[in-house]
Image (cartoon, rainbow, N blue to C red):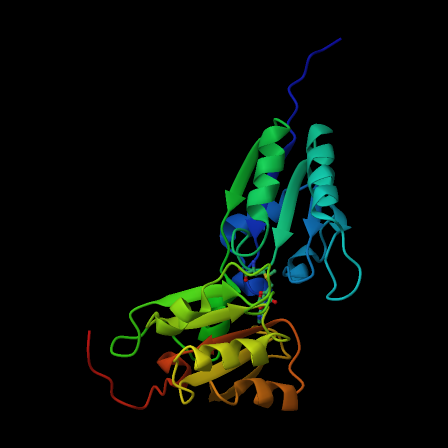
Length: 251
Ligand SMILES: C[S@@+](CC[C@H](N)C(=O)[O-])C[C@H]1O[C@@H](n2cnc3c(N)ncnc32)[C@H](O)[C@@H]1O
Protein backbone atom coordinates (compact mmCIF):
# COMPACT_ATOMS: atom_id res chain seq x y z
CA UNK A 1 0.00 0.00 0.00
CA UNK A 2 1.24 3.48 -0.88
CA UNK A 3 2.47 5.35 2.21
CA UNK A 4 1.28 8.94 1.68
CA UNK A 5 2.08 11.67 4.24
CA UNK A 6 -0.90 13.01 6.18
CA UNK A 7 -1.44 16.66 5.11
CA UNK A 8 -3.76 17.25 8.04
CA UNK A 9 -3.03 20.25 10.25
CA UNK A 10 -4.77 22.79 12.45
CA UNK A 11 -4.52 26.57 12.05
CA UNK A 12 -5.68 28.65 15.02
CA UNK A 13 -6.98 31.86 13.43
CA UNK A 14 -7.87 34.99 15.37
CA UNK A 15 -10.68 36.45 13.28
CA UNK A 16 -10.79 39.96 14.75
CA UNK A 17 -13.64 41.65 16.59
CA UNK A 18 -16.49 40.73 14.23
CA UNK A 19 -16.42 42.78 11.04
CA UNK A 20 -15.12 40.48 8.25
CA UNK A 21 -12.88 43.36 7.12
CA UNK A 22 -10.85 43.07 10.32
CA UNK A 23 -9.54 39.52 9.87
CA UNK A 24 -5.88 39.50 8.74
CA UNK A 25 -4.87 38.63 5.17
CA UNK A 26 -3.14 35.49 6.47
CA UNK A 27 -6.22 34.50 8.46
CA UNK A 28 -8.48 34.94 5.45
CA UNK A 29 -6.15 32.87 3.24
CA UNK A 30 -6.15 30.07 5.83
CA UNK A 31 -9.97 30.09 5.97
CA UNK A 32 -10.25 30.02 2.18
CA UNK A 33 -7.96 27.00 1.86
CA UNK A 34 -9.51 25.03 4.74
CA UNK A 35 -11.38 21.74 4.42
CA UNK A 36 -13.06 22.23 7.80
CA UNK A 37 -13.68 25.45 9.77
CA UNK A 38 -14.58 25.13 13.45
CA UNK A 39 -16.32 28.35 14.49
CA UNK A 40 -17.11 30.33 17.63
CA UNK A 41 -20.09 32.61 18.28
CA UNK A 42 -18.05 35.83 18.05
CA UNK A 43 -15.98 34.80 14.99
CA UNK A 44 -16.45 36.86 11.78
CA UNK A 45 -18.79 34.33 10.18
CA UNK A 46 -19.27 36.58 7.13
CA UNK A 47 -15.89 35.39 5.78
CA UNK A 48 -17.37 31.91 5.31
CA UNK A 49 -20.04 32.96 2.79
CA UNK A 50 -19.68 31.10 -0.47
CA UNK A 51 -16.98 28.71 0.75
CA UNK A 52 -17.41 25.00 0.12
CA UNK A 53 -15.71 23.83 3.31
CA UNK A 54 -17.37 21.89 6.12
CA UNK A 55 -18.40 24.21 8.98
CA UNK A 56 -18.60 22.94 12.55
CA UNK A 57 -20.25 25.42 14.94
CA UNK A 58 -19.08 24.95 18.52
CA UNK A 59 -20.04 28.46 19.66
CA UNK A 60 -20.92 28.88 23.30
CA UNK A 61 -24.19 30.75 23.77
CA UNK A 62 -24.24 32.73 27.05
CA UNK A 63 -26.37 30.80 29.55
CA UNK A 64 -27.24 28.44 26.68
CA UNK A 65 -25.72 25.72 24.54
CA UNK A 66 -22.08 24.98 25.15
CA UNK A 67 -19.57 22.54 23.68
CA UNK A 68 -17.04 21.39 26.31
CA UNK A 69 -13.47 22.42 25.50
CA UNK A 70 -12.36 18.77 25.54
CA UNK A 71 -14.90 18.03 22.80
CA UNK A 72 -13.68 20.99 20.73
CA UNK A 73 -10.10 19.74 21.11
CA UNK A 74 -11.24 16.26 20.05
CA UNK A 75 -12.99 17.62 16.94
CA UNK A 76 -9.87 19.58 15.87
CA UNK A 77 -7.56 16.62 16.35
CA UNK A 78 -9.92 14.07 14.72
CA UNK A 79 -10.38 16.11 11.52
CA UNK A 80 -6.65 16.85 11.21
CA UNK A 81 -5.75 13.20 11.89
CA UNK A 82 -8.10 12.30 9.01
CA UNK A 83 -5.96 14.44 6.70
CA UNK A 84 -8.08 17.62 6.71
CA UNK A 85 -6.81 21.20 6.80
CA UNK A 86 -8.65 22.50 9.83
CA UNK A 87 -9.11 26.15 10.75
CA UNK A 88 -10.21 27.03 14.27
CA UNK A 89 -11.82 30.43 13.71
CA UNK A 90 -12.36 32.64 16.74
CA UNK A 91 -13.31 36.19 17.56
CA UNK A 92 -10.52 38.62 18.37
CA UNK A 93 -7.19 37.02 19.13
CA UNK A 94 -7.05 33.31 19.88
CA UNK A 95 -4.76 33.78 22.87
CA UNK A 96 -6.77 36.55 24.59
CA UNK A 97 -9.39 34.73 26.65
CA UNK A 98 -9.82 32.44 23.65
CA UNK A 99 -8.57 29.10 25.01
CA UNK A 100 -6.15 29.03 22.08
CA UNK A 101 -3.40 27.79 24.38
CA UNK A 102 -5.48 24.77 25.36
CA UNK A 103 -6.17 23.94 21.72
CA UNK A 104 -2.49 24.35 20.87
CA UNK A 105 -1.58 21.96 23.70
CA UNK A 106 -4.16 19.41 22.55
CA UNK A 107 -2.85 19.44 18.98
CA UNK A 108 0.77 19.17 20.07
CA UNK A 109 -0.07 16.30 22.45
CA UNK A 110 -1.76 14.46 19.58
CA UNK A 111 1.18 15.04 17.22
CA UNK A 112 -0.87 17.32 14.93
CA UNK A 113 1.03 20.15 13.19
CA UNK A 114 -0.44 23.46 14.29
CA UNK A 115 0.01 27.08 13.21
CA UNK A 116 -1.15 30.25 14.95
CA UNK A 117 -2.38 33.34 13.09
CA UNK A 118 -2.90 36.21 15.54
CA UNK A 119 -6.01 38.36 15.34
CA UNK A 120 -7.06 41.90 16.23
CA UNK A 121 -8.31 41.64 19.79
CA UNK A 122 -11.58 43.31 20.78
CA UNK A 123 -9.75 44.54 23.90
CA UNK A 124 -8.02 47.14 21.72
CA UNK A 125 -10.29 47.31 18.66
CA UNK A 126 -13.49 47.75 20.68
CA UNK A 127 -12.34 50.94 22.40
CA UNK A 128 -10.71 52.15 19.15
CA UNK A 129 -13.99 51.87 17.29
CA UNK A 130 -15.55 54.14 19.89
CA UNK A 131 -12.73 56.63 19.34
CA UNK A 132 -10.95 55.61 22.55
CA UNK A 133 -7.18 55.10 22.27
CA UNK A 134 -6.08 52.60 24.95
CA UNK A 135 -2.93 54.65 25.43
CA UNK A 136 -2.57 58.35 24.83
CA UNK A 137 0.39 60.60 25.60
CA UNK A 138 -0.45 62.66 28.63
CA UNK A 139 -3.38 60.49 29.66
CA UNK A 140 -2.15 56.93 30.01
CA UNK A 141 1.16 55.09 29.98
CA UNK A 142 -0.39 51.64 29.84
CA UNK A 143 -3.48 49.53 29.95
CA UNK A 144 -4.42 46.33 31.74
CA UNK A 145 -6.79 43.82 30.18
CA UNK A 146 -8.71 41.65 32.63
CA UNK A 147 -11.60 39.24 32.60
CA UNK A 148 -14.67 40.16 34.61
CA UNK A 149 -16.09 36.69 34.23
CA UNK A 150 -16.00 36.17 37.98
CA UNK A 151 -16.57 39.14 40.31
CA UNK A 152 -14.17 40.44 42.99
CA UNK A 153 -14.39 38.31 46.11
CA UNK A 154 -15.42 35.20 44.23
CA UNK A 155 -13.21 32.30 45.37
CA UNK A 156 -12.42 31.56 41.69
CA UNK A 157 -11.01 35.07 41.13
CA UNK A 158 -7.22 35.35 40.98
CA UNK A 159 -7.15 39.11 40.33
CA UNK A 160 -5.84 41.61 42.88
CA UNK A 161 -8.47 44.35 42.49
CA UNK A 162 -6.74 46.61 45.03
CA UNK A 163 -3.59 46.50 42.91
CA UNK A 164 -5.61 47.16 39.77
CA UNK A 165 -7.21 50.20 41.42
CA UNK A 166 -3.71 51.55 42.19
CA UNK A 167 -2.09 50.53 38.90
CA UNK A 168 -2.31 53.91 37.17
CA UNK A 169 -3.14 52.08 33.95
CA UNK A 170 -6.43 52.12 32.11
CA UNK A 171 -8.47 49.02 32.82
CA UNK A 172 -10.05 47.15 29.92
CA UNK A 173 -12.67 44.70 31.13
CA UNK A 174 -13.90 41.80 29.02
CA UNK A 175 -16.82 39.54 29.93
CA UNK A 176 -17.87 42.04 32.58
CA UNK A 177 -21.45 43.08 31.77
CA UNK A 178 -23.08 41.11 34.60
CA UNK A 179 -20.28 41.73 37.08
CA UNK A 180 -19.76 45.46 36.42
CA UNK A 181 -21.69 46.65 39.53
CA UNK A 182 -19.45 44.54 41.79
CA UNK A 183 -16.27 45.50 39.92
CA UNK A 184 -16.91 49.25 39.95
CA UNK A 185 -17.92 49.19 43.65
CA UNK A 186 -14.73 47.30 44.51
CA UNK A 187 -12.50 49.66 42.53
CA UNK A 188 -14.03 52.67 44.33
CA UNK A 189 -13.64 50.97 47.73
CA UNK A 190 -9.99 50.27 46.84
CA UNK A 191 -9.36 53.96 46.18
CA UNK A 192 -9.96 54.58 42.47
CA UNK A 193 -11.62 57.98 42.01
CA UNK A 194 -15.37 57.53 41.44
CA UNK A 195 -15.21 60.33 38.86
CA UNK A 196 -12.74 58.39 36.66
CA UNK A 197 -14.13 58.32 33.10
CA UNK A 198 -15.59 55.01 31.94
CA UNK A 199 -17.09 53.79 28.68
CA UNK A 200 -18.70 50.57 27.49
CA UNK A 201 -18.64 49.48 23.85
CA UNK A 202 -21.11 46.74 22.90
CA UNK A 203 -21.17 44.77 19.62
CA UNK A 204 -18.05 46.59 18.47
CA UNK A 205 -17.64 46.64 14.65
CA UNK A 206 -21.16 45.29 14.11
CA UNK A 207 -24.09 47.33 12.75
CA UNK A 208 -25.57 47.07 16.27
CA UNK A 209 -22.53 48.73 17.91
CA UNK A 210 -23.41 50.99 20.87
CA UNK A 211 -21.29 53.12 23.17
CA UNK A 212 -22.23 54.27 26.67
CA UNK A 213 -20.05 56.87 28.39
CA UNK A 214 -20.21 57.70 32.09
CA UNK A 215 -17.85 57.58 35.06
CA UNK A 216 -16.72 54.81 37.38
CA UNK A 217 -19.53 55.53 39.85
CA UNK A 218 -22.33 55.38 37.28
CA UNK A 219 -21.25 53.23 34.31
CA UNK A 220 -22.86 50.02 35.64
CA UNK A 221 -26.19 51.78 36.14
CA UNK A 222 -25.99 53.51 32.73
CA UNK A 223 -25.37 50.26 30.82
CA UNK A 224 -28.21 48.54 32.70
CA UNK A 225 -30.53 51.42 31.73
CA UNK A 226 -29.36 51.08 28.11
CA UNK A 227 -30.00 47.29 28.22
CA UNK A 228 -26.42 46.60 27.11
CA UNK A 229 -25.74 42.89 26.75
CA UNK A 230 -22.69 40.76 25.98
CA UNK A 231 -20.45 41.10 24.05
CA UNK A 232 -19.21 44.35 25.51
CA UNK A 233 -15.92 45.93 26.56
CA UNK A 234 -15.64 48.44 29.39
CA UNK A 235 -12.75 50.89 29.60
CA UNK A 236 -12.02 52.66 32.89
CA UNK A 237 -9.45 55.45 32.91
CA UNK A 238 -8.76 58.92 31.55
CA UNK A 239 -8.72 57.64 27.97
CA UNK A 240 -12.40 56.70 28.31
CA UNK A 241 -13.11 60.42 28.40
CA UNK A 242 -10.79 61.12 25.47
CA UNK A 243 -11.87 64.11 23.49
CA UNK A 244 -9.87 64.53 20.27
CA UNK A 245 -10.73 68.23 20.31
CA UNK A 246 -8.96 68.95 23.61
CA UNK A 247 -5.21 69.56 24.00
CA UNK A 248 -3.12 67.13 26.04
CA UNK A 249 0.51 67.38 27.02
CA UNK A 250 2.92 65.08 28.79
CA UNK A 251 5.00 61.96 28.38
C1 LIG B 1 -14.30 34.87 25.53
S1 LIG B 1 -13.82 36.53 25.31
C2 LIG B 1 -12.97 36.40 23.77
C3 LIG B 1 -12.10 37.59 23.48
C4 LIG B 1 -11.46 37.51 22.11
N1 LIG B 1 -10.57 36.37 22.01
C5 LIG B 1 -10.71 38.78 21.74
O1 LIG B 1 -9.48 38.79 21.67
O2 LIG B 1 -11.37 39.79 21.48
C6 LIG B 1 -15.35 37.24 24.86
C7 LIG B 1 -15.44 38.70 25.29
O3 LIG B 1 -14.72 39.52 24.40
C8 LIG B 1 -15.36 40.77 24.28
N2 LIG B 1 -15.76 40.96 22.88
C9 LIG B 1 -15.50 40.15 21.86
N3 LIG B 1 -15.97 40.66 20.70
C10 LIG B 1 -16.55 41.82 21.01
C11 LIG B 1 -17.23 42.83 20.26
N4 LIG B 1 -17.39 42.73 18.93
N5 LIG B 1 -17.70 43.91 20.91
C12 LIG B 1 -17.53 44.05 22.25
N6 LIG B 1 -16.91 43.13 23.01
C13 LIG B 1 -16.41 42.04 22.40
C14 LIG B 1 -16.55 40.75 25.23
O4 LIG B 1 -16.12 41.25 26.48
C15 LIG B 1 -16.83 39.26 25.28
O5 LIG B 1 -17.57 38.92 26.43
